[in-house]
Image (cartoon, rainbow, N blue to C red):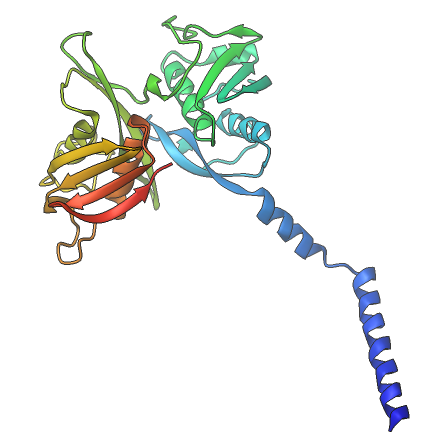
Length: 308
């Protein structure tokens, strides 16, 4: 009996050694490759020009992990004739043959130094190009500001129109600007995110409203998104035109919004469409320094969102 047990142990040990030898000689490279893809691919946001010439918020996949490499990859995605794939229905905005010569990161500021080819941008697209660069780079965590250089010299004016450009740029420059003003005094900039669609792909288009309105930015956001008159037939809002913002309060990095039942998709379940809350939350994120949005209907809380 003891001999049989010993023989069985020897056979099992030899079998294990044989299997280990096979694995050593023929490693499973596919598993290693898949693991590498999982760890180095990351979904991010870039801003590209859509078929209606709006600079639009588009999801993409970045393969880089290092922050500087992510920035380089984003610039490549934005550059015409680069080998970076973008979604059908969108266009790149940085002129072809433009090279990113260098970049530095100082706290939350990125300094981008481009080759002179960036100045070949058309007069129609020069402002859109700046918007796309600034909004794409500031979509990265902990990056709030961008400075643009050309061959080592700060770009302080647009290449064709010569309009003044701040040396340090952030999202207050606005995007897809729409002016509705009577005077240049007491203007307000409010960025509102609309829904849009290309074939089966849904995305968001930010539009900066420059007005003389004396109401608050959140009131402008809700007024625009609930308006029955869209900026263009290509822009969509799912917010019911009967929606009213009854009251709001900003406190401790939290914005409390109290609506009437018009905001509800289903009054029996207190459900608000995801497309509605996403448009409002994106708009709030660009206009308010808050971390959380609380949705109330007739003073009863229905949803809470973290937006940072």
